Image 1 (spheres, rainbow, N blue to C red):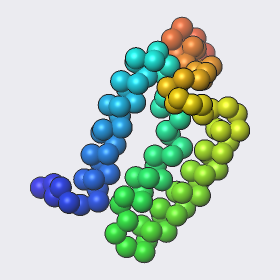
Image 2: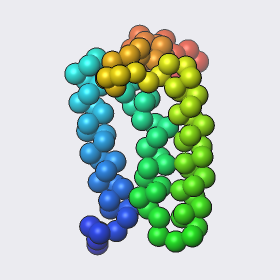
Image 3: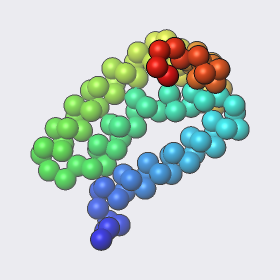
Image 4: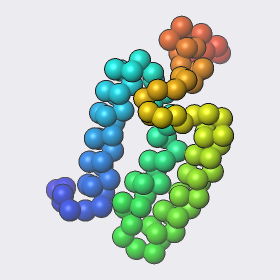
Length: 105
């Protein structure tokens, strides 16, 4: 059913590992913005793991270009710091914790 050597299995396994790692780091550091630091980088990485032909190569390159733009904007606004588990939390997480998103939420 699921061949462990396929690019999709490798990408899926990588994603599962990073989900767990991000959850652990976010929980222990009490900074939920850990996922924000990865959301612009990981889709390009996953798409490069899934290259099987020219079409998927083009998709991976387009995804990488988009990721560069998103990562640059996030960095420009101070989203990255060292060590990675430190740094400011995105202000929107506080609204989620308080339950004050507004609108139908």
